[in-house]
Length: 479
Image 1 (cartoon, rainbow, N blue to C red):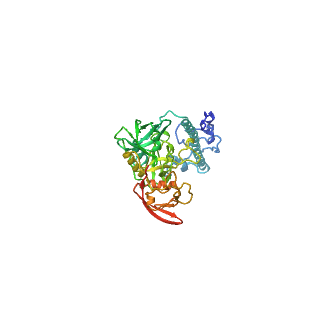
Image 2 (tube, rainbow, N blue to C red; image 1 turned 90 degrees about the vertical axis):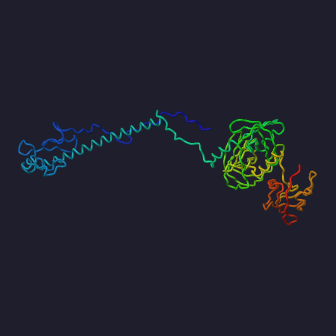
Image 3 (cartoon, rainbow, N blue to C red; image 1 turned 180 degrees about the vertical axis):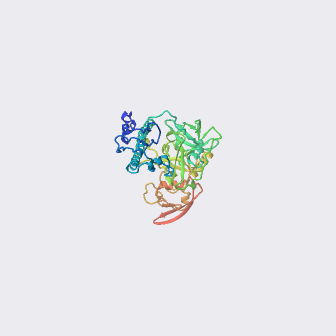
């Protein structure tokens, strides 16, 4: 578990920034507001000027008046901005021209020019001071606002943008919405055990397809309860089951149930996206997705009382766990292309060790499920195609070998069976089935069981170092 954060220390709380960290403080004592001269606004009367700021580099100079006590000459250099020399011809200009030329006139103009520069410098200095002060207070205000925002405010949260739960029918969400009403959770209580699995509605009259190993515990006097996606439940009974194909059909007393359509597993290719629906670990209405990882995987999971199943399986990486058994594997059209049945486990781990999905799950192809379900509904049992031979399970070479001696009262080659009619004998080695190389006994059995009674198969057989091809028609196994 991750540690919970402790209460933040006061030192960790956001603090307003130090104004002096970025800007030097402004000493208001070193500035002075500009004041208009006594008795009037700008500009000052002739013969008067603003005193320079104390401590400045400017030195006041006497203003000389032309012709005694009268006002000093107003030269063109001191005319106000926007006033041309011709516009300045007037009394002041007359006084200026009437004054004695020389140092006084030149000195007067020079002083006014200097003082005018002093005025501009003072104005700019004041503006800079105000800007600096505004910057400091602006920074402080921003810091306080940020601090308050960090600590939380009293304003309302943003209004969420309106959304929609509508999804495209071809999306995982759209397919799941259509499929879930037809998927059920199956709870089984046997004489000495209980379990949970999955299933789906096969016919609206209440027929539900699932795995044999899901309901086998209730075959001898147990109970089966079906829970629908809306939370309602219904008791169910076994219509028929087959351990070899690991399929079973059960029935509830309801009609008008939503049916999941069966697709053609023969059209599935590696890489197709798929969706698994079921109740893994008892979590009903669970949806996972993935792809078809491989086809024609020979899978032989064991069932109750040592029953062996032979599945020519679809392999998928969609998450499948205990409890998913019997649930549908859907294509992106919402059709059932497989019945989830088994998962691979890490070597050395058992069911009691909590081993779950590792990305390798297996489903019974829908083509096989359709044939078997029809038989179970019609007769309560399924037929199994065979060629009529007994295999040598100790053989370790290429292909599979027909046993060399009788076992359990049965001959290696059944008299009158398909293999006997095709001329096969004890000790023959079968290398290929319909052109595919045989790697072991399980693969060969699964390949034959994937066919239908009456199908014709082609075998490549080796005898005494010579290979030959034979054809035969499959027959139904006899119990």
